[in-house]
Image 1 (cartoon, rainbow over the protein chains, first blue to last red):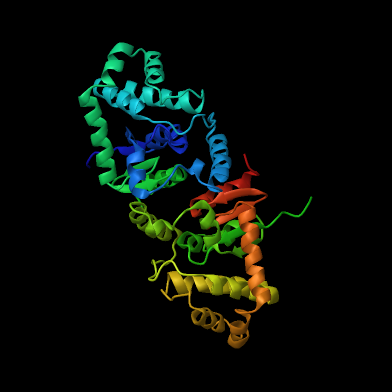
Image 2: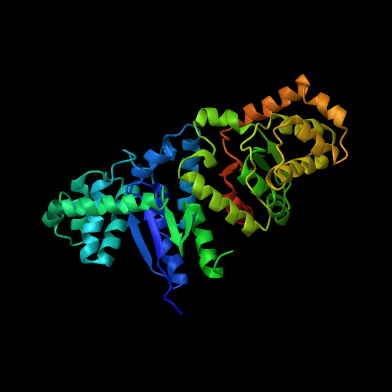
Length: 202
Length: 202
């Protein structure tokens, strides 16, 4: 039997639903003996093509989204509050992730989780490179090396490639999952991802 | 114990996800001994405020939506295909529904279901008043009386009121459910509605 493919988990660090999914995706994957590839990307690149704006700046939809986010967080049993400022640029957060990924996959995931907590639980502005290096530093990452990496052309290129590839594959949202080639968009679809893995699809 | 409130089910006749929800909402409600108030409205009025466009005309999102619609239909075990033309105006369909609702609530629901089937299964253009009267006629509704009703100022006012009230209450999508005052947007949330009714919320 061929080895089961990992679940690809695309997200933007400034996406509240991405954060909520990040708190749950590993448990879903474990239930089905799958790995998860965490793939932060710059969703803004896709939004330029789709013409979408963040939910919380859309009239009417913003009010509903605040209700739904709080409700979804309660249901998932995780802390959450919408930060201010929001949304923020996530270039530094993404670059830090991919730089660290080259060295230590587990630590890179820990950094992604810590950045999400810093933003959506502690309200820290992860749009600022200093906050990113602080969060990484608390995990034992070398701050100076990371600061330098944030301007490293190779790291910049890596992030650009991930983002371009995502868009080329039709990925535009956060969270966005690819499960055995099948695309699932949105935190609401996590249950469906779970059932897809359980049943092999329908 | 006070009588349980009905589930309010808002939808647009031109909404594929509204159609998919219409095939499932009654079963969800029955499990919890609830009634469903079927509330077609002109979602376009809300979209003028939110600035949204239909999913199937948004770049990238359109492609995903076609995959997701087909997958959601398979999962629900219902026939579905995206009609052409799409979307269509749903004024006549809505007016027919509210006119009939005054006379016979069950038959009005049957009409709503038949209009959805005509559009999303048979590919008939329910934007045309003649198609609406045809579909209603097949259910035993008086076609001439309905044709006249479609231009009746009282019927027009009723639809305008339903739509204005919906927008005033923050309803903007299809399907959109109100369950004991709690708003749920999207066919993907039907499971959550089910669990909310089961548990009393969280």
